[in-house]
View (cartoon, helix red, strand yellow):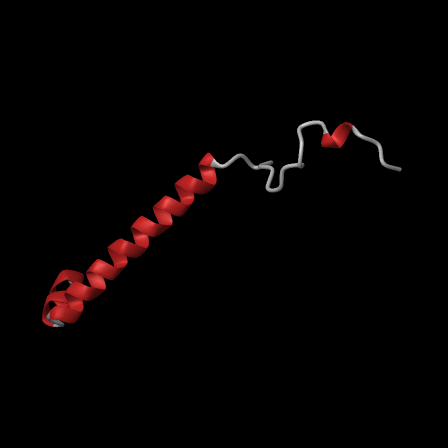
Length: 58
């Protein structure tokens, strides 16, 4: 089974399918790189001031 021959026989839909597959692959690679570059313990919400966690309000 020749995948290239099948895509070529589909005409422009084969080209669109190939381009869509490449775009999906690129997006997946970018998301993977971003997730690897982000530290696992990333802080999502920072306190209002750097010493806010030092004050005891109890």
